[in-house]
Image (cartoon, rainbow, N blue to C red):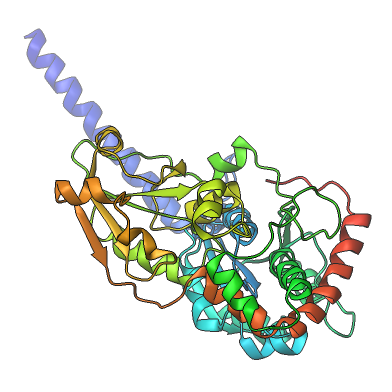
Length: 424
């Protein structure tokens, strides 16, 4: 009896609850939303939800530049720019625009596009970008490319008329600034080569054409590394462990990874290097790159080499999206112990390389991987070497000398008046 009574009460409670709930729904439908003390109105909640949904769209940032003779300073700027958003779009200035505003570029647009596209922090590249951001181009960035912010370094970028190249972006409130990477610039690198040209020209005025041969064969006196004289005589880069960590990849090879190894100087890191690294990476799961010491390069290519020191060359290679890990100061000879230590599955070498005379020697640096059957020659996609870049400077060194003198003056002014800028 008690059980029947309990069931009846439960049914009655459910019926009454249903009636009350239905009446409440009808009342809300007729009367509209009712404000509850302490809670925001329904419309406000909807607007807030829509704003949050919009914020979920990736933040896209834009950075432009000439990226001529691209170096680790350019790469660090792109790394910092990428950290300010979710996607980085990079504009590469056309050859004509560079010539009109700065002088002739050393590397043509097609090579600069290869270099920028290979940087692991870059998501998209725009060719033939204008040197100065015009109102029309800025509108295009905001509407067609969905750019949220335009990025540039803390060093001033002035047009020939003295105006700020980024004034429009600043006035629009869509400009963000990063810290310039000190110790390197294209001006500095070109200056290092021009210094060699001047010194060798003084030594051999009778035969100017020998300059190119001296660069290629390694003849001529050693450059003074005492630090005196021209600011372009030596590198002013101060390597830190933090910078190497910032450029490094966090992952290592898996237990079953096919590890491909390629080595070299990678001096004046260029499009030819990028393309051979791309091919090497396609042959395995993990690309390990050996970078030879300054002493090794000097002994094989001449006392004037390398132009870039070991740490500078290491950062340039690490910034490449095809590279997983580097050996800083790799041995010239590849030993069985090294192959075992790094679990190397394949050793590759490009067909376009400088100083291939070792192929005639008994002590071939690739002798061990050849005997093991894990050596392979790769057809280099581009016929470009470090000497190619140097010859471009030598053949037009007067134009580059004038360009550098103008740029060195502006860089000196920047360093004299610079203040600390927080950044990485």
